[in-house]
Amino acid sequence: MISVIKHFDNYPLLSEKHIDYELLKKAFDIIYNKEHLTQDGLNKIIALKACLKRGLSYDITIAFSDVLPIDRPAVNNFNVKIDPQ
Image (tube, rainbow, N blue to C red; front, side, top):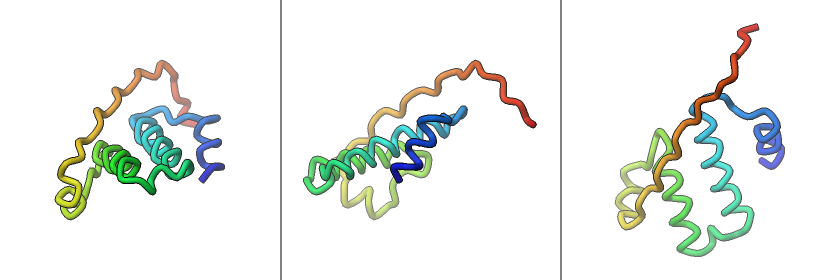
């Protein structure tokens, strides 16, 4: 996973997927630092997952009904022209 993070830090995504990547990176940091072993850390991961495109499953929504999703960061306008070749 660390090599994937290094790759996308060096070659960032130029679309809305960049936001999903940043949220994934935050979740990875929580797990890497073993914060997910506490209820607060697990709630942080659930809040991050809730703001992704696919959101939470029904069962997870019911189980963590007190956890509010974080605000999804806005997409930056990337002023980079992508060469289709």
